[in-house]
Structures are given as structure tokens and as C-alpha cells.
Image 1: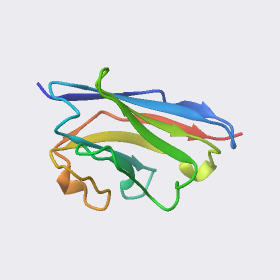
Image 2: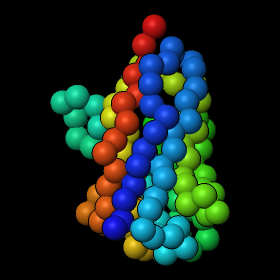
Image 3: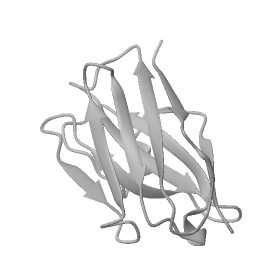
Image 4: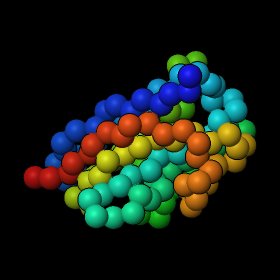
Length: 125
């Protein structure tokens, strides 16, 4: 059974940092690219970042470039999203998702076949 489980969300002050984890079960990161998406109340779900299965290349949304870092640990079958200099507008439910593609993208959610349940990130003073 293919499963993704996010963890690491929480409440943080503006300027703070968090690290989200996405543990994958039932498949390996050798064949699946992993993306992080987020959805704020009343807004569309948007792509944040992804890491390609083929070579580990990464993509970031302009809004998080320079502040977020995606990485993977194949031995642990886990993908991380490190978030720094968090802003109130980063508040959302964050989801990880898997796509059986060699090179990832964050523009098209339909590429992703499997989704986690989400983890809440709240940035507030």
C-alpha cells in the first residue's frame, strides 16, 4: 500500500523555522518524485517545491525561493522541507505528494497520484 505521512507542522513566530517530514511507505524514492503543496483557507492548493526521482534536482515556487529547502534521504525513504524566515502568509496545511515521473514540477497537481493527509503550519505572533 502506497502511503505518505507528513509531520513537523506547528505554530511558529514570524521569522522562525520549521522542518516538515514526509515519510513514504510502499514505494521508493528511486522511482517517485515528491512534491510539497500547501493550501490556505479559502485559497487554491499551490505547489511549493519538489524533488525529482531521477537526479534529485529541485524546484521552488518564487514565493519560497531562498527560504525553503527540499531534500531527501533515500535510506530513510523520507523527504524533508526545511522552512526558514517564515511569514504569516506561509500559514497553510502542507501536503506531500508522489508522482511516478523522472523530473518533477509543481505547476500541475494532476501529475501526483498519491497524497498525504497534510500537516498544519501556522505562522503568527
